[in-house]
Amino acid sequence: MDKKISKQDKRLKGELEIPSDKSISHRAVIISTLTKGHYVIKNFSDGQDPYSSLKICKKLGIITEYKNDGELHITSAGELKKPSTDLNCGNSGTTMRLMAAIMAGQKFNSTLSGDSSLSARPMQRIIAPLSLMGAKIKSNKGTAPLEICGNKLHGIKYNTPIASAQVKSSILLAGLMADGETTVIEPYLSRNHTELLLSYMNANIKSEGLCTTVTKCELTPKEIEICGDFSSAAYFIGAALIVPNSKIILRNVGLNPTRTGLLEVLQKMGADIKILDKRTVSNELTGDMLISYSELKSSTIEKSIIPRMIDEIPILAIIATQASGQTIIKDAADLRNKESDRIKSVVTELKKLGASIEETSDGMVINGKTNLKGGVEVETYHDHRLAMCLYVAGLICQKEILIKDFEWVKISFPEFESLFSSLLI
Ligand code: S3P
Figure 1 (cartoon, rainbow, N blue to C red):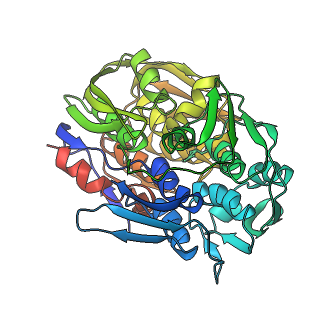
Figure 2: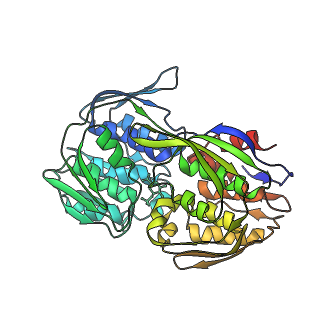
Figure 3: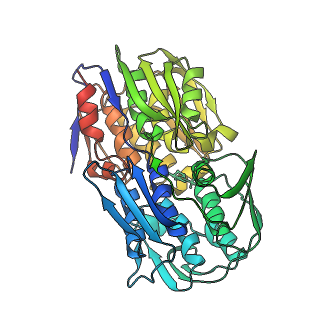
């Protein structure tokens, strides 16, 4: 489905509730494979990626049922069933990397597969540590499909070469099935939803700085309420900051500090963003945000902040086209391993719109402030975040743009367009 976006001289006004966090949704359902008993998930994401995790859990014998009030009821026998077919992870890296750990510790064999984009993404980053724990995983030169021969696992102490929450979470989940202690040490802190959820469910887990240790234990099934997704909120934040005269309130936005690097960067760039209320749900910080159109200045983004805003770098690039001065993004080479090579795809498509932006080996350099001309067709590279970023860019282009294959937004945010329309007046 192609989508035309034009400036329409509208601004963003009003307020909305941000839909469920994708990362936490994955974890809330995947954890059922290590739990015995019944629990309820409130506000489970309706994105296609978390649904891939849910479908796999069902294939493994977890009973899942949506009740009328939208709550997802989960019942786990405490033992998984051997699946009769491949476990299809669709487009979801989180599903594949976390489920690989779970399958590695079973008494049966299984295969994890994915779509063409996921099948091209690096899996060696989890195969290496899981193999050190005793996992038997055959891959296609480090990529999916992963043929996993269930085995007994043992703990390790592992220094991850990249700050990746998927890698860290994979090792920690395997650690819950392993004999002995499992420790992961990261170069920089990545999102810590797995640690927070495990601690919420009374696991033996301890985090100190960059180091987290788990040991095998029984988890306590508990109601999990999922807050709104900061990464989804980022598109509204970005649009409100660059579309003149905008002022919006976003409700129930996840504010876990390991996810809100973008907020810190934007505040440094001069963004008028206020946090109205902060509370904790199921161990996660959440709150409301008030965002107003702002005159922005450039910034340099590097090192430890990168993993805390890894999914928001594409939208930051668009915001940076409207900030005065040169914005430099570096130490972000892992962006090349996402649903698309997000350094190349962002730079290529923003150039088409008229941005002054250049690719570097580990990031990009953006010169602002530019009037984006638009009047062209742009590609999404089958990447949901590219589709949403280009939509925001379309709101400030002088001429209408056409976004090809816009339907990829459904991977994380099916309500994206209807929510945006509700704010544009
Ligand atoms: C995620 C971690 C990040 C992020 C992805 C979701 C997660 O990936 O880009 O969208 O839920 O753990 P990496 O761990 O590969 O950085």
